[in-house]
Length: 196
Length: 292
Image 1 (tube, rainbow over the protein chains, first blue to last red):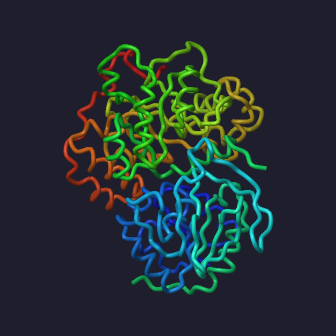
Image 2: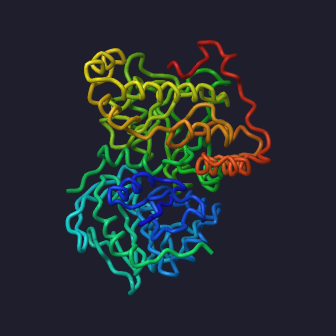
């Protein structure tokens, strides 16, 4: 199976490495045509303001929205979560792609000095080591969105059908289980869609 | 257990900056322009390196009020510079809530022998390097990110290229070295075996490595990316050019499409005058910042 990782900016190489450990054909996506034949896309951590501008410049934003509406699987971590959300509470300059019914707050845990790592529990996966870097928070989620993990009462991993988002970085320490969940439970169901 | 300020968290932020451009800004207005152009971070400093070079005298850390204003203006991470070895400037910068500290040769060094013990801080550090030995020594002192030194404030990319070429060559040499030769090499370049083993294993610096010092155009940025850098710093090159907004945006795009000459040609069109610059070969030895 071929899965894309948005390669415009951020730690996309770490996601590609994790996917390769799962024997997935992981490709770096920087142009709309790079999505051809992929069964899903990971949107990595990076700077959401930068990524939003490059999504527009590359015209990948429209392509991702069109595919998502046909069931294309998406997994956004950190900045990726911000970009897929319905609304950003504390940033009126960045317009998110509005593909999952959540409202997020950027840098909600504070500045870099407040970045942290901790142990969490994920539904169907179990204990997981999570790394939060200037992380965003989900401040509210719609009825169709399922919380897959919480930390101090706040949802940090959520899924709505074909779209999953997380506040933390599962790719940094090389744990493959969350990516495996994405590949096996979400990507297989969505068939590759022709570029249009 | 929840832990803050770990090396994973420090180097983690550098990982998120990869494929991005960090821009020097001297006030809130410039910071806004940089963020609007797509910078992943801004470096808050009172004078860009070209002006520090022209003014002469002692260059110190920036006024905290100016750094605070920039922190309040943008939502992207903010970096600030401390003088080499000046751990109190670094403490002040950490107290301001700055996201990354650059222990920088662009400012006047404060200690003739020592760099800052960066393990004492929760805020991560980036340091400049001209070769593998320098890069490894800074990492051993706790730097979570490295950048080439280049020759800041010149608009001449030759020194950044030199430093990246040297690091690449030395990494390749280390990769080919058997254990017994590695002992001697570690002694020669004054670094530990542990860090050299990591270099050998990974075939690169074990932390994120950006290009810095003299980059002035989208093509310069793409050149450094093709040489293997993870991202770029642009100092004087943006706000000393005739059209900072457009040039900043173009450099951001060039770092994403660094290996796509067709895109780079589009991106490089009609950007106006770059900074005029100084050819590094015309500088006297004592005018160089990189040897600090």
